[in-house]
Amino acid sequence: MSAPRPHPGLFITFEGIDGSGKSTQARLLADTLRAQGHTVILTREPGGSPGAEEIRTLVLQGDPDRWSAETELLLFTAARRDHLERVIWPALAAGQIVICDRFADSTRMYQGRTGLRSRVDALHDLMIGMEPDLTLLVDMDPEASLSRAKARATEEERFEDFGLPLQCQMREDFLALSREFSARFSVIQGNQSIEKVALDISQTVLEHLEASAS
Ligand code: ADP
Ligand code: TYD
Image (cartoon, rainbow, N blue to C red; front, top):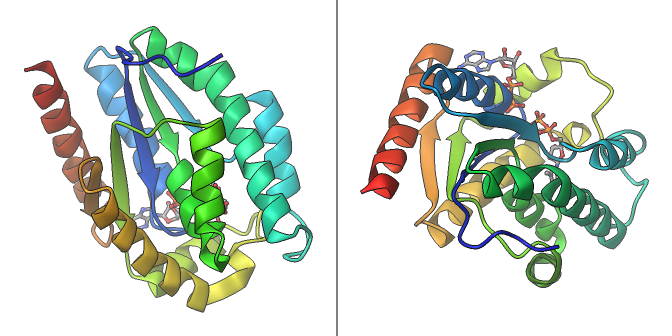
């Protein structure tokens, strides 16, 4: 099984540090696009398919030292492959819009940060082999986003446990990644009201839809 190329759908991903508002905005964008008559699959990573959700539990819960960096990379990639095969590729092949809360750019950032970027890229080329059509980077001040993320108090804290220094590093790395893949990235100012962020995002997506239709 492989990625439909070129596919008639639209693959949009949300990226950014924890608590920046990705999940909130992914939901709102799905509502907006559905109201416009599009068929939308709203999904997330790690997870998004039954098998990948099981892997999500393995990678996000428990001791921060539970997995080696290499094992963690393999687990995230295995989850992504299952998610693509069972959910994303069939939806794109059917011409639907897929909105995914985090995707491979998160692996480049989080698993790539400990000197593993070349292995992340090699594994991506070998097992994933596709990029989103549009990536919305919700950029935001790490102190504010960390307090938002902490206020949620879930059990999925393996990464949030790394705290403010990691979030600051991640913000800079995400911005660098948006320059590396500038053709598909759009940077959204996250430190605004939920409604204003949603408006900026829907305008960006509308422009993308219009450009790809012409
Ligand atoms: P992420 O998916 O990036 O971790 P969430 O969408 O889950 O972020 O948002 C984290 C928390 O911050 C949630 O409680 C959410 O309601 C709140 N939140 C999201 N966007 C904003 C915003 N623009 N202003 C204030 N609070 C927000
Ligand atoms: P997520 O539930 O999106 O967290 P949040 O809503 O707080 O932003 O993702 C959980 C964590 O998983 C997040 O800290 C980033 C991490 N992650 C990786 O390390 N690699 C990956 O490939 C993905 C998709 C997520």
